[in-house]
Image (tube, rainbow, N blue to C red):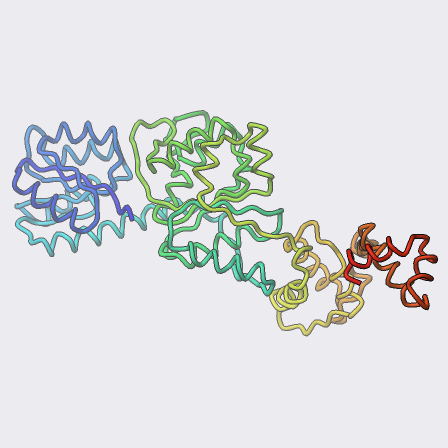
Amino acid sequence: MYKGRIAVIDDEINILKTIELSISSAGYTPEIFSNPVLALGRVKEVYFDLAFIDLKMAPMNGIEVLTELKKISPDTTAVMMTAHGSIETAVETMRKGAYDYITKPFTHKEFIHILERVYEYHQMDKKIKGLSYQLDELHGDENIVYSNKLMVDILKTARDVSDSDIPLLIEGESGTGKEVLARFIHNNSLRKNNPFITINCAAIPENLFESELFGHIKGAFTNAIKDRIGRLELADNGTVFLDEVAEIPKPMQVKLLRFLQSMEFERVGESITRKIDIRIISATNRDVEAELAAGTVRDDFYYRIAGLKIKLPPLRDRKDEIPILIDYFIKKYSGKREITIAEETRKYLLDYDWPGNIRELETIIKRLLVFAKDNIAKPEYLPVEILNFKPKQAVQQLYRIEDLEKQHIIEVLKIAPNTKDAAKILGISETTLWRKRKLYGL
């Protein structure tokens, strides 16, 4: 799993090489620079999570490098390295934007300790900065209620792939629980302690797509009054759920495709390349095959997001779960009230086809709880579309002509005293009757 890119700036080559080995051994990606000017040039091209900067260097000293670094990449967390450690030095560097400092010489163990501590702070700082953009991603209970055999198999598949990073596409009608399943996969994965970010692709205006996903810097466009972290970056080391992925405009599909291939991106208005590590789970209520044929979804984009497909059945095809869901939602929303569902009400709920699926059932249960002042959910509290719904009659079984003929011969043979009379009743010869009895095994 990608942990972060780290710059080390020091004019002593031996120290650079030693620190490079330490950083690599801890699973991070190091880039070392003996020339601070070249280092700042690289910072303009690539995003670094952390930067370790030596205090005494030429032609620029460490504080000058730190000052320029913060102008170019304010989100990079800096640590100063100095052989001249003092309270005054620490105060000076922190005033200029450093998070901490480490005094030379230091051991491998000491360096790794501060590296891990600073990176933990860096990750938390990113989350705090992006908190206002995550608030609308928070949802309530994520439990999955199921008993249907097909759903049991789907949940088994979901558990099996949870620790894989293979991109998933969840198909299903609106309200079938696609996001709940995506959260279930995330919560059973190695990424469970990291963010789960939902992106409703159908709700983002086309001209804001790139900014929403990749972020932007101040002044990148009108109303860009401050830097903003994109939703993909907020999910670093976690999972991104692209809901209604078929709604993504084709130009944005191209940009997302490039990102998915390398996990690298640039914020709008910025030329710094950033790298993150996320797992992508997508969902759609569309017929993807039809969208591909119509050209609204690119083939290469589809194959990139659909490493594995899971199709959620509509509620009408798993009605054996309705009683369990009814009881679950009553328990969830009734508080301390003891609510009884009248038998006639329950029958209406079982007969209805639920075009809005589980989401619609949840809304109806909430409605019943509002009206059930006497704690009994009566039929009259149901909406008219449910009360007037007529279940489809079972389709009468159709038989082949051969099946009907066989049954007719059997019935005639039961009443006819002999084969000759049976043939006469059937209007065929005895020879023909013999052949048909042989054909039908009679």
